[in-house]
Image (cartoon, rainbow, N blue to C red):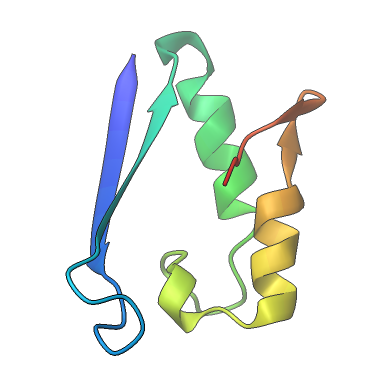
Length: 75
């Protein structure tokens, strides 16, 4: 099992004191397939996916991506 974690402070004007932490758990047997799917979402010249840099349209595309018919992202 692999775990990927990211963190962020919320906008302190809207959400004072809020600190966000997210994690993704990926089973080892599908790790390479997961990487291939995520790499396929990169735009030309893009090195990584980063929520902050994505447009609303791209964010929807990323969150609606599935893997073998399974939803990957939950909010």
